[in-house]
Image 1 (cartoon, rainbow, N blue to C red):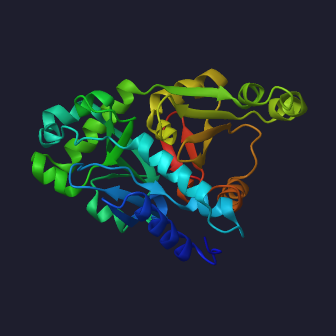
Image 2: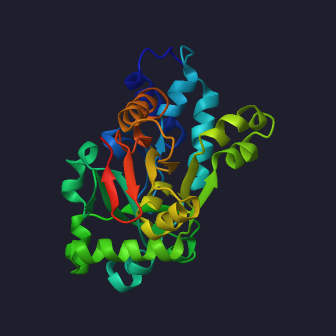
Length: 304
């Protein structure tokens, strides 16, 4: 295959190669808007018998190739992923028209409001500080009848509200209630977390972490930064350490709790978060550039 000069040529060559592998089906490239306006390019193999089919994002394969030309090995891997994810038959989706059948699997997540403002015009949501609480449907295998599909999700749109005849406030409220009930918040000391992730490295930072303690808060589900909404849990934690806390938006997957006592100034915390977001995180994983302060008596405010 020819050498790849840019991503667009790479994606088009992948589509052409996949079309040769699946001559009886339609191979399409799709641009998908993700969190914070990040756009991914995916490839799908469509046919008349399947209404639901996987989309495989191509950016990781392009980044892996670097200056190397597209190879049959890459196409083989993409085809293998596609075959492992395809359903084979059309799943039973009629239940999605019934709000009573859907509501039990509603969950919510936190995203940045400003970075997703245009996208949120079509999505029911609730403002929270500089963030937005967004409901989504969590897919389970049992939702799809006898078909096989790994766990996934889809975002609720305004069109769903019209179909279900339910208000945005009611739907967001239901998604929050389910999340609070089904996904438990977990707070772990930074040293304990580092020790679990890398036992050999942890002793090197133990003294530093104990002098300036930090705690990672997430949920036992996905999109763990939603743990910010568990204010009772955070309040109990503050009582246990006898200190209010700064809540650092580490990513959409977790936040970091830092006791107020002995903490660096708020402006420096905000600067640190902005630098980490710009240099360490993938743009799609960024939650916010602002740190939050949680007061045991008054709740949240934005750090300045």
